Length: 410
Image (cartoon, rainbow, N blue to C red; front, side):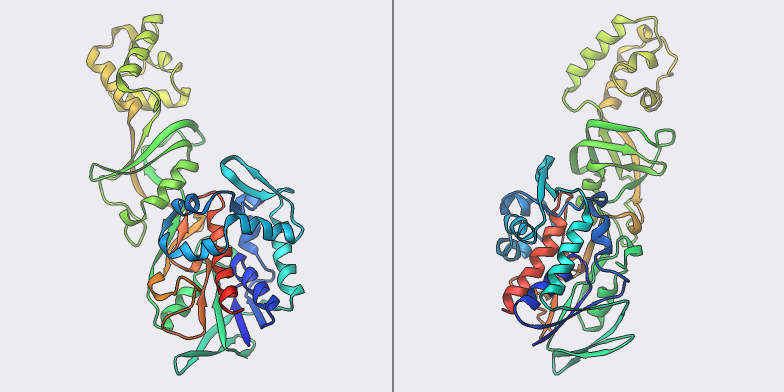
């Protein structure tokens, strides 16, 4: 049987290698000059390839369509993934949050291992070749056309990736192929991405630790996360903001714009309730009653943030600390517990780590990733409408969905 795998990223390499290992005639087509361009830059060049957790925990970190992935993840667990790369000679290490990396901290070790796996098993790699069409006759795929050749085949595996980091070749090609074949594609947008917000001027570069960030829309707290964040020249970013951006996808329109009245709320002291923080503020004021209230706040937060907090609380930053009223102090405490910035939209898809949206999973058999409408067509990886949080979960999805196809065609 001949299979054509379109896309030599994480999912495509894994699938091509597995199908070739099973004895199939495999052609792997990649439009770039080399394989794994997006894989190469993941994890800031270190490649967080999976997460060393149990399957239940893994699925809890899947944001979109976790039930769809049940079979695939149980069929190729994070433990299986680690064992697979160990079998290829790649030494691994596990870091904070059970994130798994190559021991060398070099993503290229993962790219090279997957490329060798595919080629050594006999996959025929065609670089710098762009797929132009997938031919279907009598409801079954029968050929793939490119700008250079035409390949007769019985199986086509769509592993084209999403639409983030387009410079790596992830330009959403798979959505066009799917639509032409009659499959539904849910609006691809960006996830795990910074959020553009108003009112952050003067704070760019400031990093905050141990804070709680929440997304509020229509006065409803949609999602929250605790940890680290940072301010950018256009809004907010950092780990907890990226997590929020994935969880709030349905609250923005097709252009990633949030409804009016949406905002990011930051609790600068989440470990303290209002009364405890109020008592702390009173003690700080009592220790330096003649100092400016801005100076007193330096003991509670970064210096560059104090003026912004006082501005939102309606207090002049040079106001004498000992002279503030109870009402002013309560406004100050409320602001420290709920510093708000208007949420405008998600940042450009170019800056997103993963694509949210894609080929509707209702079109795909979850056991083997086969298309229900077109015989011989399989869909894997980021081109599907599945996505997860940071921590190695998205690459594990790519590998697991690829392995599901391999198991089905053994």
